[in-house]
Amino acid sequence: MKIVVCLKQTFDTEAKIQLDPSGKISNENVQYIINPYDEFAVEEALRIKERLGQGEVVAVSIGGAKTEEALRQALAMGADRAVLLQDAAFEGGDWHTAAVILAQAIRGMEFDLILGGQVAIDDGAAQVTTRLAEILDLPQVNVVTKLDVDGRKVVAQREGDGATEVVEVALPAVITAQKGLNEPRYPTLKGIMQAKKKELKILGMADLGLDPTSVGSAGARTRVQSYALPPARKEGKIIGGELPGTAAELVRLLREEAKVI
Amino acid sequence: MLSFQLSREQEALRALARDFAKKEVRPVAAHYDRTGEVPWPVIRKAWEVGLLNIQVPEEFGGGGQGVLASCLMAEELAAGCAGISASIMINDLACYPIVAAGTPEQKERWLRPVCRDMRMACFCVTEPGVGSDVASMDTTARREGDCYILNGTKHFISNASIADYFVVFASTGRGLGHRGITAFVVERDAPGLTIGKKEDKMGQRAADTAAVMLEDVPVPVHNRLGEEGEGFKLIMGTFDRSRPGVAAAAVGVAREAMEQAVQYARTRKQFGAPIINHQAIMFMLADMQKDIDAARLLAWRAAWLADRGERNSREAAMAKAFAADTAMRVTTEAVQIFGGYGYSREYPVEKLMRDAKLLQIYEGTSQIQRLLIGKTLL
Ligand SMILES: Cc1cc2nc3c(=O)[nH]c(=O)nc-3n(C[C@H](O)[C@H](O)[C@H](O)COP(=O)(O)OP(=O)(O)OC[C@H]3O[C@@H](n4cnc5c(N)ncnc54)[C@H](O)[C@@H]3O)c2cc1C
Image 1 (cartoon, helix red, strand yellow):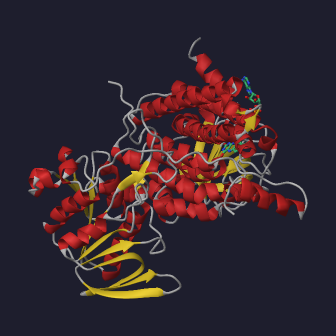
Image 2 (cartoon, protein in one colour):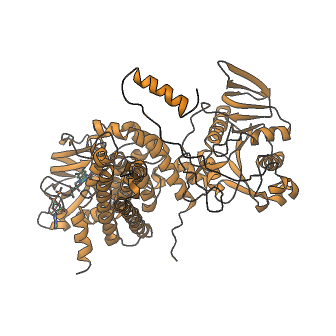
Image 3 (cartoon, rainbow over the protein chains, first blue to last red):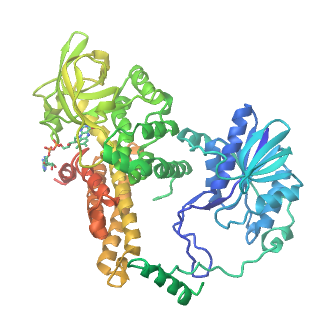
């Protein structure tokens, strides 16, 4: 079984989001991680390979030199090889162009299954893998919490409102991981050292044979007008005293200050 | 050329240690601090991911890492809990004399099980009457045929209660001073070896500390590390490698205290402003930041020298003293910034202050480090 895992490098979950003087999101003093949902995808790919006792796990990411760290981590966890899609022309792109680039790269590979995270924690868009599946014309199951794979098909579980949905699709297919699918392993020290010797291929526009108008800002379907931080939350108010006076005061404040009733 | 660029593998190791500290160490730090239990589940997990024995050569199943890598790990783990970090780091400390002076057969006999079967080792120098003045130790090793007979008491030995192998230093030539000290590996089941009661400590309570009593313990000659009289050199060589790591652990403790203090100072308001805006507090934090960075650089330099095979005794002493003293000051001021809450056990900074104190004492006190540095100026 050949499995491709799409992963994105994101800010650490604890990173403080700030804007730089030009109004863009600042990456100063920021630690980077593999998007946690994508890490579930890496782990699942490794478990599938281990369960079947054969196969290949290829980690793929779009990004710059820094993104190599995320791919190396996937290699240290146990992925067999990695592909970094890197080109200055990719800059200024959006979820659509990311899907275009990934699709082009993955078309050139042999694969039975594509795994990704259900959403990236930075932009929270949940767009790329969905678009990828559409471009490649593959069935997709998203937000999956349990996955069973046999040679020809997968059975995936998704948690709905008060019920569990069980979906069966034929391979090849695209599956996105939700929290609960598994508990990712640590990349061991041994894995880190072995990762040094694994293949990490860097592919750009020319290698992929991409049309320049289809990527970067030229190919983007969305444009960012500006970034703004959420307004600082006003301090809460604690109403002191005894019932029923406090209740009356609460009603008064809700009516006169908050104007919600 | 000067470069602060870590290799990709070092960056990855640091990220692993940070993640491990966040998920496995920090959440249980308060528990082990309160109970003083041995943090077995954490030690086992560290072993599984390869964070135990990282300095033991790869050919015996260790991590094959150098001193700098060990510093990167120590800073992250100690930021989670200095006691748990120490429990993990002791194996490397105790194994170093075996790595440095052991024959291939001895390495196979002890390093292999340490790495493969998670056997624990401890490093036994200090005695009830002998601390800083290591050369005057009272424990004796008397040769009798194929054995040495060991007698004496080792005191304040980290991981003694849980150790399988005891790297014991004893005098084979009373009156020879430091030239009479010899190293041995004593196995736990050796007749006459007993473990004293666990110390009830002020800080780093997750780390086990106990005495080791040796009463007519027969130790085969083939358990001797190196030649007779080479022990003192081995102790000092071990400290040259371990002190940068202790310095890095001190950086971790200080960094954690500073981060807690910064966060608190941003949100705590007095006199109408977050206290971080009061310059006295801001300057305290600024001093923390600069001293922590300076301490880290000293530790890295001492480690870098060791990894290049160069002599680093003075640099290791400077790093250890500066970083430990910095950790003590930073944690004390962090408590100050937290005010009354800092003194409460419900907040995490008082533990950091208790943990920091030990960094100024073990592996050579801050005074002894100054003695080492000062002697190079005479
Ligand atoms: C929790 C813990 C764990 C430890 N783990 C280990 C271990 O695993 N293995 C091991 O062998 N030891 C271990 N030790 C022992 C530790 O290394 C010693 O405590 C330390 O070296 C100091 O020795 P001492 O306690 O006998 O103090 P002393 O040497 O009696 O010193 C007392 C005071 O006098 C000062 N002093 C001494 N001589 C001088 C001098 N010439 N000039 C100026 N000041 C001086 C010291 O700095 C100190 O302030 C541990 C200790 C503790 C508390």
